[in-house]
Length: 258
Ligand code: CAA
Image (cartoon, rainbow, N blue to C red; front, side, top):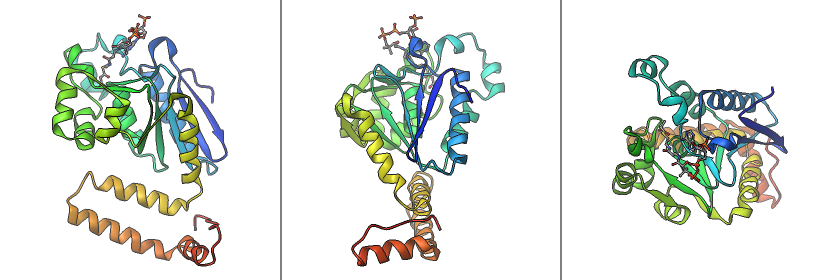
């Protein structure tokens, strides 16, 4: 379908979704989030797609929720429509891996959206922040929870209470992003990572994603049990036989998601 606030390109097993509201630094309004959820649904349903990249422009991944759209809303409005919660659930329920490729501003809801992805590759121009405090509110789609889990209480509190921005180098040091690359190389790096993921068995990929995500939800003993069961269950797959045979035969594995 034709989108107005995002673009979608599917190339060689990788769907690249680009946020595209340049005049508003990709601020997340209802239309953009609706279109993003639709595009993620289509990528999930497309058997050819094995990994998704979510990106923005060189100036902004996304500068937050759309303040102009939000500013006149009342408590009853945001409570009744459960502001952005349906979209949050749809994005985080996506089973295929999503890489956030972030250049420029990732602020407020933009930082939160990047953190909903499975990992973040940052350009050296990236700036992360939760500046909602400057607007008289706080983060609303996961910032206080996910940033705290990723970088720890002290730095998360600093970001949320002062509204300051974190550059890419600090974000990597703090564990918010997995890699930092020169801005010119951002998409090449993200594509390379996505292609690597696309080569694996989808069964193991989905299991790994579910197991890592479980670590944020449950105790260590429950998480270890969850991981152990998934690990054991993968021995029922043809891909486990193929992967281990290929290693011993010193050849590339040919996974078939079976
Ligand atoms: N919502 C709506 N429009 C936005 C926006 C946002 N979050 N961020 C930027 N824009 C718009 C600006 O209004 C401006 O539009 P106009 O030309 O029509 O005025 C255009 O994008 C360019 O922005 P600036 O002129 O401000 O660009 P700059 O380079 O001088 O500054 C910036 C860049 C520091 C990112 C600045 O735009 C800024 O501070 N933006 C707001 C960041 C923010 O507070 N984000 C949190 C939003 S609340 C939220 O996200 C809640 C939640 O958790 C769900």
